[in-house]
Image (cartoon, rainbow, N blue to C red; front, top):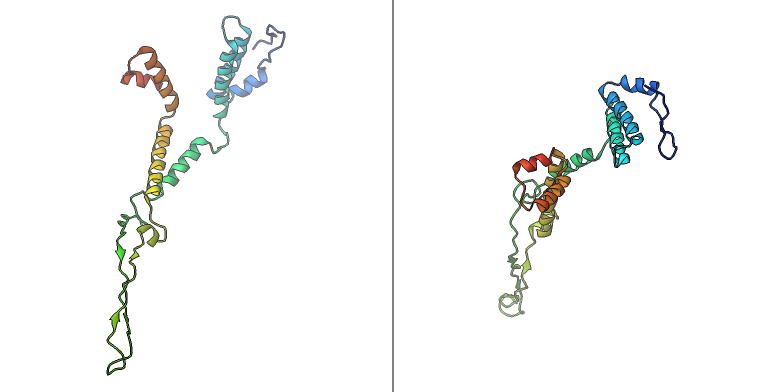
Length: 213
């Protein structure tokens, strides 16, 4: 490629992708060739006078070149956001559902009915042949409330607040799962809102599909 020096209006010299770099990138196959082409395009954009915003167009070229370099063969595997989200979904799926008990079966129905205390026989006095009067019943003690399923199972059950929290967690997990299956939902929703506001009509199926391209 040409070694002609190209300068910006301010006099700063733009570096040129020399033959060594060009050969090294070309040897990497299609990703390397794409990265080299985008680097050269970015240089031409910055030195040309046809574009209104050459710097922003050049930035897009450089991002594309970086993406091409990151998928070159031999690039190390790194844990990213998608991997972390997938691991989080696996952990949520492994949790028991809100309608399950400690062993995964149906949760026992709460039983809040009070349980009457046992009635005890107490001696009343020392009269009669046996030296004691006939035994009489002691006053009835207060009823003892029965433990709920959550407390009787050692906390393994789930109260109303816990079930609602689990439901919200699973709903958020489904939204995250949809984003992993089809990324870009946030930007599609924003674009759809702008289009509907400008056109004054809701988008159809074809327009919704076009937003995903």
